Each structure stands twice: as structure tokens, then as C-alpha cells.
Amino acid sequence: MSTASRTLIVPVDGSEHASEAARYASRLASALGLPVVLVHAFPASATDLFEKLGAGTEGMTLSHLSGRGFESIRKESADTAFQRAREHMGQGVKVEERLLTGEAAEALPRFVNDQEASHVVMGRRGLGVFREALLGSVSERMIHEVAEPVTVVSSGQNRSAEVGPLVVPVDGSEFAATAVRYAGDLAAALGLDIHLLHASPATAGEIPALESRVLDSSAAWPDEAALAEFGRQSGDNAFAAARDVIADTGAKDLYIKEVRRSGHPAQAVNDYLRELECGEIIIGRRGMGRIQTMLLGSVSQRVLRGAAGPVTVIG
Image (tube, rainbow, N blue to C red):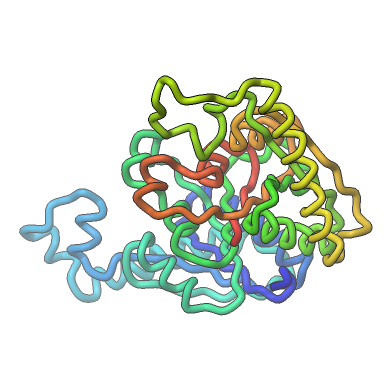
């Protein structure tokens, strides 16, 4: 579906990460004429709120938050979050506000999945590498549980005021094709360049499908020459497939750059974006079960955790 026919959904909580998401969404909404829905999730009860804050739920303190007191806090939280986000909305952007009931990790995916033709733009609140590995973040849960595009930005992520190219990792898969198509529509609407990036492994251990397997010591590993030839052919095929997809979008006359790198795909993509010092990543969501993803991670998940710019996961 075209980027020009979507509604931007922006979860907000009053944080600087949410403000960064609001700024990104405002730029996109202004350029494409899209409506914005600001959403704020708040616990359903005083007990849930205290559990979220890690406080006790017994005695007078909890009773003080019953009835009108709790509703007042709920409304104040939403009003503050919406007001801070609106400060970053450009003139002429149509903005709606929705207050959701429940934990953000559950309420947000449920709300988005009930909408049609949406695009989520959200901030990423850092949890630390260890805690994220065990629990995940709200943004990563959104990526796993909603089918719509999800763009994740972080406070202070963009080191340049320049709006840079769209960097699209490609490997010839259907997931990459979906990302290329979306990037083509977006690039055409915004007048941006597209950088197609193909990463080929320098060693067998950098092949995502093999890196976490326990192989017998006698197993045959591809040598460097075989890997180099594999990388060349894989890149040729991936770029050709991507250009075929772009030919069907409005971006066919824009500047398209082909970039070849070696190493793990996620590391190669993030390193390249740091070299550019501006731009954003559009990457396909590769289907993996939740248990496997939690244990092994996915390329899109690794890109998201280490990116120096906005990351849109789609497909």
C-alpha cells in the first residue's frame, strides 16, 4: 500500500524519545499530507499503576488513588504527553488524540491492529542490552506483533540536520522486496535517494542462518574464495531484483546507489549509516518465531538496536 494513504500512529509518553518520534512524524505528515493519531497508554487501575511503578499496593496510599484521584492522574498523564508531542507538530498537520487503557506493550499493538493502513512512528526507550535480551522493549514487541510499518527513532539519534538517503538492505528475498517497494514510494514522495545495500559474509560464521548452529568439527566450511563468489552472485541477484521492484514505483527516475559490504548484515548496515552521518534504514521483517527471535535475534532486530538513525521495519 502506498505511503501516501496511511495514518501515522505515534505512541507518546512525554519523554524525549516520544518527542523525537513526534518530530519525525510531523515531517512525514507535512510532506505527504497524512493525518497523525497521538496515542497514550495508561494502566487500567490504581493497582496496575502501582505494580508498574514497583510500589506496594496495600494501605492508605493505594486508597488515595481510587476513583476520581486515579482518573485525575490518568488524565494529567495523557494531557502532558499529548501537549509535549503537539509542540513538535507542524502547522497544517491534522492531529487526533487517543487515550488507551492498559500496559503499553499490550494496548499499543492491539490498537494498531484494529486500524487500517497505518504507519507507527515511535521512540525507543533504552532498557540496557541485558534487560532487552530478556524482556524486549515496547518497540520490538510492536515490530513482532503488528503487520504495519513501524519506524523507531531515539532521542539524539540524528547527528545531521540533513535529510539523507533511504538505506535498504537487500538479499533477494520477499522481505527485502517489500522494503524496497515501500522505500521506492517514500523516496518518490520525498525526493530522496535510495542506497541498496547487500552484505555478504566474509566467514561462514557471519552467515545469519549458520552463526548460531552447533556444527560438528569435521563439517566442511566454505573457503574465502567460495564465499567471495557467493557474495558477488548474491549481490548481483539482489540488486537486480530490487531494481525490478523500484521500476514499478515512482522512484525509478531517482538516484539509486548499489553498495556492497562484507560481514554480518546488521553490522554492515549500521556501519554504513554511521559513515553517511544522516539518513534512515528501511528493512524487511524476516519471519521468525518469538522463541527463536528471543534466543537468536533477527537481522532487523540487531539493526534496530545499533542504528544511528531512524529504522523502519516492514513486511
